[in-house]
Amino acid sequence: MSNPKVSVIVPVYSVERYIRQCVESLWAQDYGNLELIFVDDGSPDRSVDILMEILEAHPEMRERSLVIRQENSGLPKARMAGLRVATGDFVIHVDSDDWVEPDYLSQMVRKAVEEDADIVYCDFFKEYEGKSPSIDRERDFSPSDGPSAVKALNNGVIRAYMWNKLVRRELYNLDEMIVPIRGYHEDIVFQTQIMYPASKCVHLGKPLYHYRRRRSGSLTRVSLIKSRHHSAENMLHLYDSLPKDRGPVSACGIYILLRAGWYCCITLWFKKLAAYPDAVDTLARMDYIRGCRVPVAKQVYTKFCCALIKLFS
Image (cartoon, rainbow, N blue to C red; front, side, top):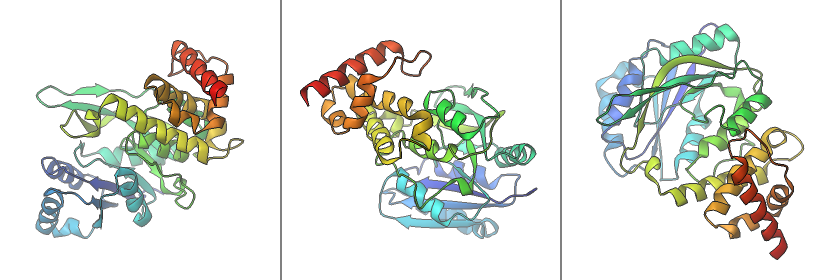
């Protein structure tokens, strides 16, 4: 494919201050073979009204755009709603409070075609209100196969953001995909499953996405304890739902468990961890891993807590 179609999925919720910049940046793309899928997740403000006003003013782009409406169900289900109607050869996700460079899609597609890659991930700008943006460089862990990439993802070598990864659509097995139960760190749950079956993942060393940080009311402002609980729930759910002898868990299961276990233990959420006896047993018996995203000192504490949970269960 020299000119593959790209489906861009944009969940919309409470972004009336930002959605115009997001939409206009997508319509300014220098890559033409795309479809824009906007998912209204029951937004309570004027976000969707603004979106529709822009669509009406640009009928040439309206033909390439689809708006899906649903009751508020959270980010994971909004992404799934978009995925179910996507028809592109590749899929990419954009957050509706962010924006992208004009060559965001053309650069990613060119890299995918040149490298015959299933996944391309790029660098990005971090945007803070009132400050100059900074460039965040992804570590170049490419080319890599799926099992290696998913291990790097869960060990913090590759970030799990959905919006800086162009993904071949066939990697999304929607009939069997485990959907995150919470909106925080939902990207890790999705990306763990998507990356594993990939034949080739490559890095594009160019910043093409503008990631808006510290917006009032966004997930980056959620309390630390709540965010750790949501993350732990998602990872425990993923680990518990997938087979242990094959697939992503066989490649990165201990890294998934370590983050979930540490988040539960540091917040004293032992009741939640105890509900997953297989996870507790694995963590209580684990050998320490150096060079891991969860440092050895945290592993020691997590292992100790899991041993006590086993003892008193």
